Length: 113
Image 1 (cartoon, one colour):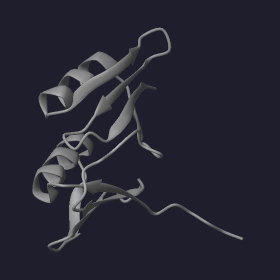
Image 2 (cartoon, rainbow, N blue to C red; image 1 turned 180 degrees about the horizontal axis):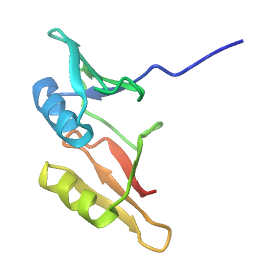
Image 3 (cartoon, one colour; image 1 turned 120 degrees about the vertical axis):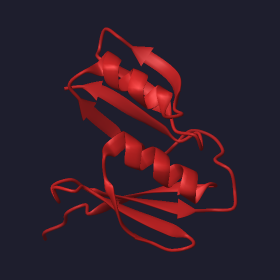
Image 4 (cartoon, rainbow, N blue to C red; image 1 turned 180 degrees about the vertical axis):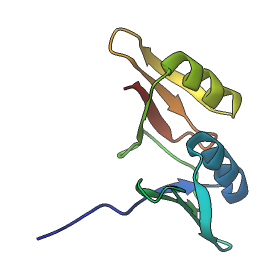
């Protein structure tokens, strides 16, 4: 069997705001969009796609799945992403990663690579 993950979907209550946030964070481009979903893709076509899906209910509880974003400059990228609207949830300086939340409250990790 051959399986590959082609896309990860993130629920949002603000599709346009979430699209702007995740485009700025990842550098991904809009591949397609309609009133309920935006599909973002790596411009180099090498990364997994990211889709944003408009949902009516707010996020409740802890994420059951999250993104790990691998970067070279942990402090610089965490600062940049916070400036884009993310909030810091928890920091693990000794291990080289920080948990952030997007404007919808979805948590993700920024990891020094």
